[in-house]
Length: 224
Image (cartoon, rainbow, N blue to C red; front, side, top):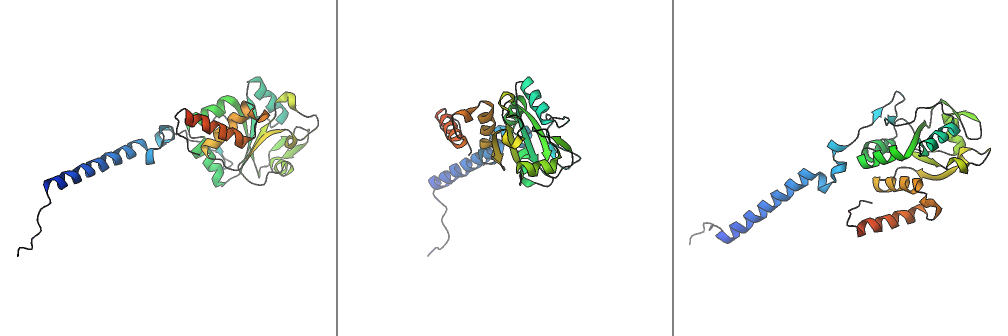
């Protein structure tokens, strides 16, 4: 009895060739579009890199450089048709890094924030003197304590200038707060939520749900 292995029928060989060819084609598409179909705007070649400051904090080219008079900074934002937001960060903070190297590295998000917001970065442990909205002058680290900032990143979105309460600290002048790291989709929605004043009619999570539903209906793929 001949126990040699018979060759596979030609039809089976052809089928396996088609499977292998399709697999290689799919792999090529995955690699050419980024990891598992990652959007082009998020590919490394399209990302906007931050810089590193002498204080060990990541920087954006459009961060505000001011005398740290918060009322004046808010007025400047208004004069440019923007809203005012404070980024609280600290050296070595992994999620602060993600804000810059993931969220703000996406061109769409970077442009939107730069065009619609005046952004002041404050250091949770910093010693620079800041003048609060109530007139009190404090080091950054003391202002953080006064405002109840205990972790980073924390983003404080201030009310508009005409809504300021006389004699009140900035802690009492907030339109919204981002308490910690938000992934890109939610991060972008928060800035839209504040700039377009959706907080006048919706809680933030309601706005996120509403926006996600609309985008899906338009055929857009979203990563929440």
